[in-house]
Length: 268
Image 1 (cartoon, rainbow, N blue to C red):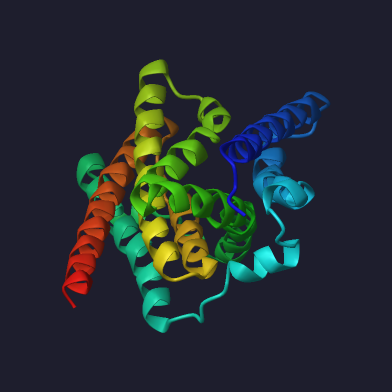
Image 2 (spheres, rainbow, N blue to C red):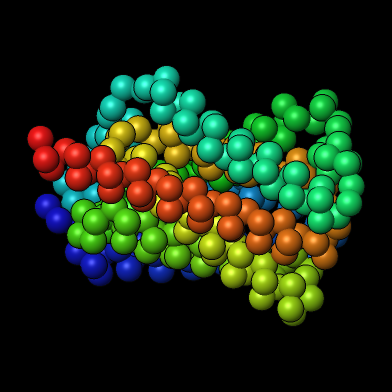
């Protein structure tokens, strides 16, 4: 049964509301003396699962006859391909490498000074980033919302709409960056550009290869590699701006490749 627009709105609104409430609770906890650093390190692990929690709690309404187990199983329906695992690893890795070299040139610093060299922290950081974003967010935003929207609007429009809605969901986090008004505007626009670019890339991959592992890898590496960059807080807008340009270029390439492939297929 086709999901109605009102059910998609219900999912989005409830996910936003519960996300904001969760952030508010974190601020209340901080007011009672819990160090903000501890909260910022671990609270996102819980908060990022809000979209999936909404989907599971209101499954009867949102999944339309499909059980929770069937829905989750369907997210990994296609057998994994080594080729697409490598592509999912290579895309964010190359973009990260280019970003660091661009920052190195702009900041006039060696690349080594821009990357965290404390390798002992990497395993814990990797696990936290895995739990903090991809595993909690992807089933709801990509597995449910994108799937339903793209079925109505097509992969490209569905990816853009998902990117915009998913990106704006992060709005409170922008305000917590402590940026100046101008930097905040640049950061917000760049963040949305990067997220829409990533959403398009993941949308085309997930739309053709029905396994959420690919999206999880891209999302994880984006978060993890970005966390390794060492730069002054007031230069964060610059980092995200570089990411936005590179991910939008990668998204355009993905669109062109899929457009070419579709034309070839139509001639057969």
